[in-house]
Length: 333
Image (cartoon, rainbow, N blue to C red):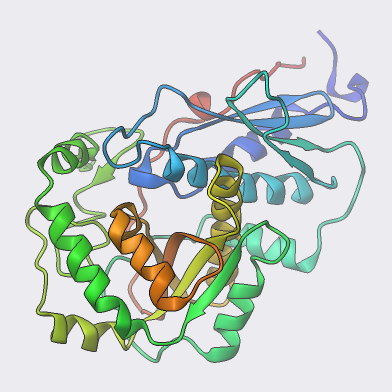
């Protein structure tokens, strides 16, 4: 065995590898599937997509799963920088290994910026707020700062100025999803009992995502109440929505969208804002196409983010163990 003092300049100590793994552990993912694995290698770290995780009805193209990996990449980059290295990321670096979502080369020493420190601190505080926002709406300058966090990610975060116009699309999507038996069966498979006596590493806990009403339910279940369009429009007018767009709709674009989404989310948390992400409506084809046409969008909608303020603290989701997330660690003694 080698001692940590004898490791090469690009190697990772066991403690550093744990920092990488724990940062990715806390990333958001569709249905809390956490479809990723982190593999530290000499001078770099690989982010791999778990191919044993699938949502064949909700996500047949694995769009949301790729976005989830993109969100994990944002956390992983921050962890690399916090460890005093420059994070040079390449998305889908190896055609021969399609499970490798990204490679971060990390041999160049570099100090983290104040922005890196703020966003890294937000990783453990980030929650999905699936309830009604309370207090004043998010301020215009704060929303602009959140949207700017998507710059240079390969995706854009666009403010929807009149969120009330989403009511018609949300209503249609909710009714279609609520009445889709195959979708509801798949969602039920990923819905878990998350009381202290039931230990799980992934899935949606009933206490985290309870049944409720639109737009605050987050996920549409059989028991989700869909308000009249007039009521829904009134509620949405008090919400702030960002729409994440990409120029194309390939797998790399989905990774870029998730990367942008998590960077914006962490920026929001650092500004004391709460957020939740919705992709369900965009899996209804006519809703996605109508959103493009109604807004005259030059791109493909990938996700919606609700932003607001609340005095409530959402409960944390269950997480996979570090041993499931972090692979290829060597012990150095």
